[in-house]
Length: 80
Image (cartoon, rainbow, N blue to C red; front, side, top):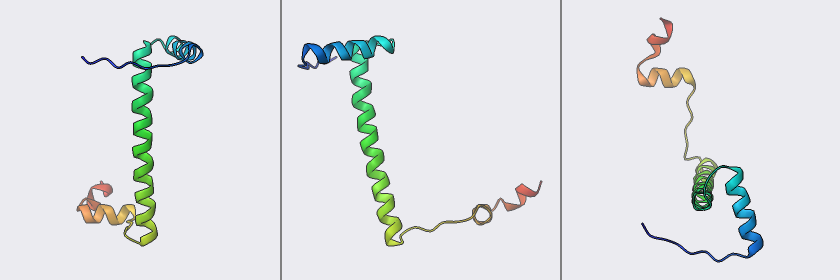
């Protein structure tokens, strides 16, 4: 498995160690989690921006619950 080196100040390392210890995980795991959470957040923001752009352009159609059930052909199942 590859290794990655990271240069930080003593103060930064102390914060990082404290965070990892507080969460009961290794420093390596804390760094990986932070990186991938940041990556996921940025991807989510990208999707939100795309959604908002499509919404502004009128490229979206919304359906009520009843319309959706009818389109799926399962409206009768709700009556049971």
